[in-house]
Length: 253
Image 1 (cartoon, helix red, strand yellow):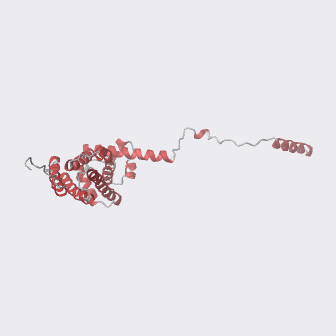
Image 2 (spheres, helix red, strand yellow; image 1 turned 90 degrees about the vertical axis):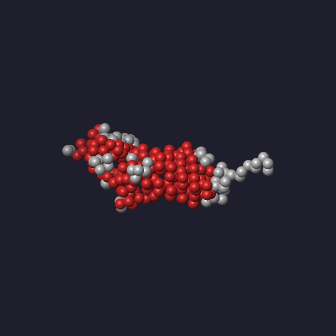
């Protein structure tokens, strides 16, 4: 290029650059990326939670219909519309899946107890029998007695610490609910003010736990028998801690 032409080009370019107005321009996604959705972290967690719940719901149904032994992870995956590997990612074994099913439904027990806890019957035996009736009905809603036996065996023989901790945490929560009932009765004057309600509930819960285990593992121990046994214990306990009502004086006194 001739020197004068080059000088003219440089001069023109310098003038053009000086006239350029630099502004912040928003970055627009390439058209090739359109239609590709990248889930936000919150959405990913929500999706995982929904997938986990779907697997649990299908497993609950399959366990009831097919039995624990005959239920296959592949069939649970198919009905949950996920890959078998996805089920194993959430629940490494079928025992863990069953224990997680127990834990999931136990998390919802406070909803069923809300009415009772807010206004328990003022007759102590009736109040605690109602508590155990609600809990038993909730427990049998998602697992029958045979499945509960598998769950108890899995809890006893398993080495999954998290599941074991959840189980005993649930027992502690049941005790807390019963303490609330006892304190409500104490507030109403039904139970003595100086009564150690925490110790009282420990005794009641031990009785309830004992008879509940018998109900689950014995075919000859039905639910009415469970309630009868527990009622007899409750009557004895409250007769021992609640002072008898004073007798009204007779007309001749």
